[in-house]
Each structure stands twice: as structure tokens, then as C-alpha cells.
Length: 184
Image (cartoon, rainbow, N blue to C red):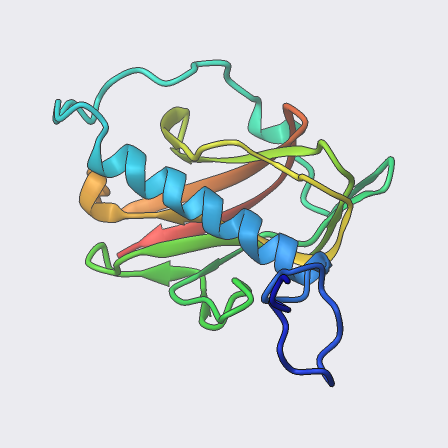
């Protein structure tokens, strides 16, 4: 005789899962995985403190970057913003255009985004023509609607002098949208 894993007869049958598996849960799971991968790379990244290691130097002409949301084949990237905090849904709370270098961490967020399964997105931090950091690329596991796509940047891992910076989002390898901000 087997025991019922769901002893409450009034609870819906979720196939043995202790949570509802919907688009929002999948989106949150995707973002958590990206953050874990990002942090694991920081913690276990080999220990060489060479912050000047070359990145993929495929340069993008800043004049080619669109300043409006991208809409293509079911992909709609919201306007990218910089935030010093995010909410439980990984959406921006404190949107800024300038902050102190001691702000830990800061986030590049594309709120209200829609992506189709298999869409890849990454963000690149740059100053002038110098690429400083490429965030880990993420891939949408499903079609996702009205989600916040977020990348975290930690100034402790970078040398950020006062000045003007830019973060560009790349969708399926193509420059999609960017945001400029200032480190005071």
C-alpha cells in the first residue's frame, strides 16, 4: 500500500511538485540560475586577480546600438535601465543614472521584456571604446512574457574610475539596446 504524498485532499494535484510550475516560476528560476552561475564564476574563477584580462573584443560601433526597445520575431526587449536595487521579481526598484563607485552591486535591467524559447541575452559593460566586462549569456528555457531580464555588476571586481559608462544588451548576438550612466 503506497502513501499519498499529498495528504491534504483539498489541495490540487501538482504531480508531486510542492509548487506551481508556471511562466513566472520558470522566469524566476532562470534568473536565480544566472545569478548563481555569475557568483560561482566570481568565487571559483581561478583566483588570478587579473582584471585586465582581454574580453571577446568583437567591438560594436555605438552608433549601431538602437536606443528603442527591440521587437523581432516575438522578442521585445524593454528599455534598459540601471538600478541599485531590484525587487523579488528581479525588476528595478531604484533606477539611477549616476552613483558612487562604492554602490554594491548595481544592476542592468530590461523590464517588461518578452522573449521566445532559445533567445540568448548578455550584457556588456564598457567605458568609451574599452569593454570592461561581459556578463554571462543566458538562454530563455521557454517563451517568457513580461519579465525583467537582469544582469548584476559588482564594482569590487572591477576598477571603475569616475566617468561615463555604458551597458549594452545583446540579443541573439546582436546589439539591442543600451543605457549610459555615470560613476561619480
